[in-house]
Image 1: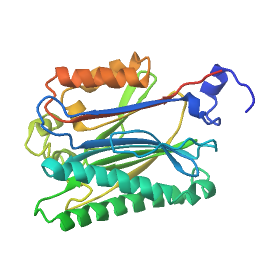
Image 2: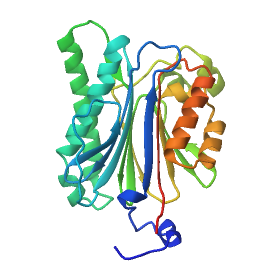
Image 3: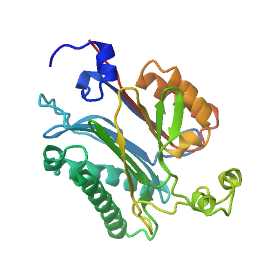
Image 4: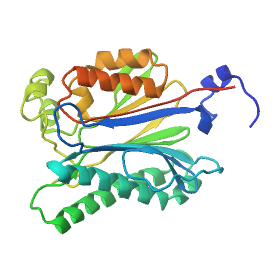
Length: 292
């Protein structure tokens, strides 16, 4: 790759970040009240194979790859259903999605950033996850719901794709502004959209924690959004254990002053714990950092 200045790289969206120019970090914590952690996250670099960089799942080995990166994958899932059922649902979802993307590498070679193939792959991945969680719930026969949220970010420069099921969130921070891109798939948000409740009332209502869409639930309605990649973007994925206790304005402030993805993840986790830590907390932050 020809030499380029950091300034040129930051301004030229045609140039894909190198692996060493990706600053990404994820963490998960059970919080201060819950006895177990039903959240899971996964970060992966997709080459001809998948290189797992960090995850809360059990990983037997991490492959070192030299071939060019085709895509980058970040996923976060918040299990519901109580006890081990929710944890198994979130783990199953991330495992199945990773396996599916590993087997679908052909689309990365064929697509040009506007290709319908990426959207098709994401829709099929959500379906495979939903079927796998339903099958596992039936096999284990506990007579209880086993379900999970799924927020999935897939970067295929110069685009990235967001897959949303449930109420775990994706935020975009850019030029001092924080924007929630994902829409909470809850009964409360549905009532807000219909004009039945105000946003303030909805946030305090009993419907705020009732999902209208979930992997493994009665309804799984994945929403896929295609967005433009940019060197100035900072990406945040999180479960509601963060947003229950940390307002958007404080999240924006933390991202505005971040020194690294790891630093800001750890700071936001501490903010959530300081706010009460009543739920499991999972956070993923990523950005591109130009280097000489």
